[in-house]
Length: 452
Image 1 (cartoon, rainbow, N blue to C red):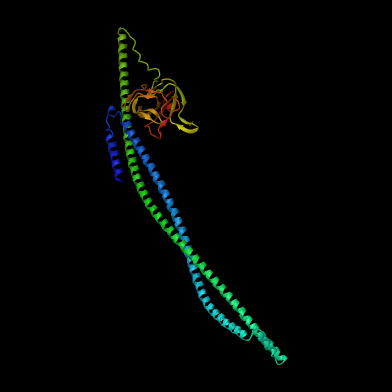
Image 2 (cartoon, rainbow, N blue to C red):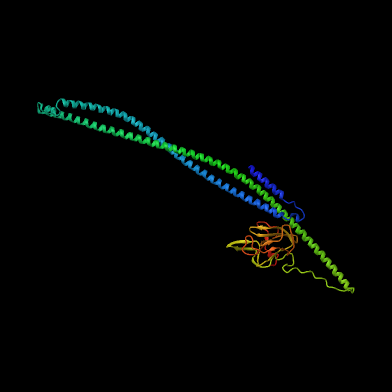
């Protein structure tokens, strides 16, 4: 965990802990506690989401880095294969060059022998040429023929002359053929050697280039490994920060639940006190009625007992009352919004004009604030026959109550509006059997308790 992160987290923790309320028995001492705690929780949650987003970015960068490493490894393997093939070819060409060089050396020996034969033939031909020149060329052959003593001698002389002429011609033909063959062999072997040397040079150049590529890829792979190690450290630091924020968020959730429980307990105590007072008043009225009856029997003047004042028109008898007048536009349960199926966790009541919103039952305000989704919203905790309930009043144009405030059934808490994620003036009313939570797992159909 880096120093900067540790210091910032320590400050955040100190501010959070320093602003946490000390639970007491009076509502006024905690008039903004739930709201403040939830604001801190929202801030921490937002920070955690930001950190988690960075963690996801680091994971993406790490995955990209790993993919690059795998790609580089594949390229290195491919280059290594090409290097091996090139080295094999270089070895083969070197062997061919050695064989060709040996062939050239052998050919050189043969050429020396052939040169000697050609030299000997040249000397013989020179000898013939001198003899012909000294004796008059072909006329000498005629003298040889005419100098025969007999026909048989003539035949012998003709045969001898033909033999000599044929021999000279053969020598000359062999001379030309051997010279041509020598030139051809020299040209072929020298060409083959040049080709082999050129091919070997090309292969050695290719090997040098492949070695350079492989070295560069190896350096890049090392850089990627170092980068991945750095990314892993950064991700670990971010994960630690996210874990710490999650702990703080969990701690705040516990504080919020504790404060909500405290308000719920106040509501429960208030209900007990209300029932006790109602029983006392009933007993008092009964005693007064009994006394009035006795006075009447004694001849005293009679007067009718005053009737209890009736509740105001919009307030129903019993523990619950409807929170607003208007038309039910959406009931609790599955419905379709903007073409998509969704579960509606409350009841929507719509009406035009300035429509007051009332507390559905006696209780304490848990939170009164503005949210992007609910707009102006009020949360109230109630205790009905010992059971805790929570009601939610959303999309109001304004709120007239504050956190921690005690309210009675029918008290005005605000006015119907169109704030937050809303598509027209209405009240979105939720009833939860228990405490409110983000998953709304305690939400129930308000019609189970309220007659709209």
